[in-house]
Image (cartoon, rainbow, N blue to C red; front, top):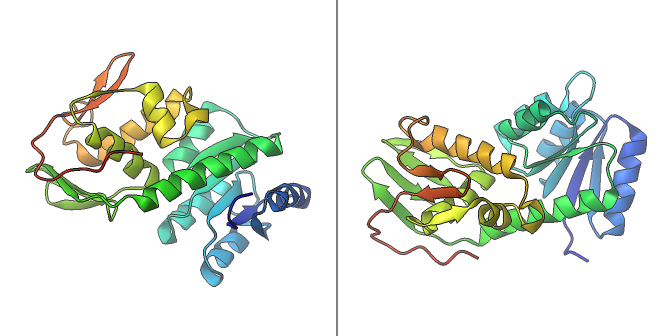
Length: 242
């Protein structure tokens, strides 16, 4: 049973809330609930921040996408979307807004628990990193401790998954990182075939650190194989990735 973590479950359907709460409590989680986006935001502000949010997309007044946008203004808490809409566009939109995963209804409660564990494990691994600031060149330096990059004189915040992915790429600079390896190390072994997640977050990173994301010089694609971060002279060392 995992050490106690707090999960905020947000859904306008009480039966879904009760169903998810029961299954999570059986797994040893402390569960908070909200039946609207507004209530979820109030709980995030008024109570100690949960370790993860399970957020329904299709809600009245303030839908899940709008709620997540507001959450990201005040918190980096990991979020897993639940939605009856499984189209690729909605998945990409959810991830683009800062969600950490997306699960389509109806779902198996064991699948939800597995996704929650994977996201929490990923966040925990990020929290354990004690990395130095890495100077790639005059246009890019990365502070892994604080999840920021300085890009051509401008500070850029890295979301947790972006941080984890960039860490893997930079710590293996000059080496080909295959799709499956990156998926396993960043998202977990159960995600090794979900390559669309990887493509999406590579796009995010390129938009943040590349002068021309369409002609990248830092994160290079190896067609059909994976990605390689440009080789550079290291002034300091990066601990071996876990």
